[in-house]
Image 1 (cartoon, rainbow, N blue to C red):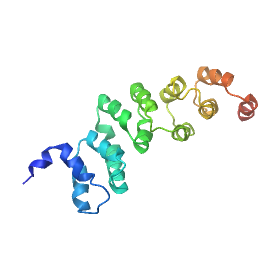
Image 2: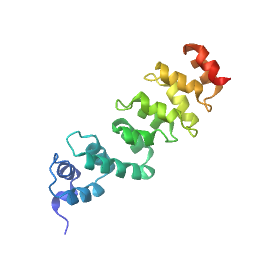
Image 3: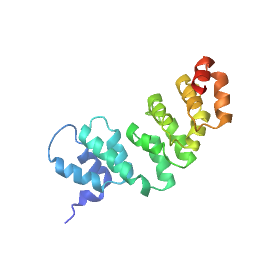
Image 4: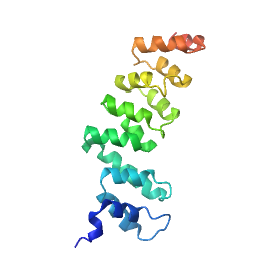
Length: 173
């Protein structure tokens, strides 16, 4: 039968995240599959949990993103680690994107990688351009201008702030 402690996610998170010990890794992996998304996010963001368990937690979270409701995705965007944020940046909801852009774990390189893709969403382009955290980062302004999907209104407002302009003009020619 099921042990009483398996009904409490807090206890299962503590067992799953017991330091670097290799004690019963199979049990820990099984526990991860039973944890709710918030507990998986906690395990993924806990630095003293082994990298194997963190990676498995992140994988389970990414796999379950399609099943999460809007409010759950917004809450996850606040606490997500970088691999999960990379997937959340493909979300179609503006509020999820705005919260993900404010996550302190998100780095400029993560956004540059997304901006270089051909399938970047227009919603994300607008959210990055409007984000108080990212709109003044030179590399991101330049990437927005050079991204072929960026609407002209956003690109032209960034050209004015982006120097040297000769680099932008060379890229367009």
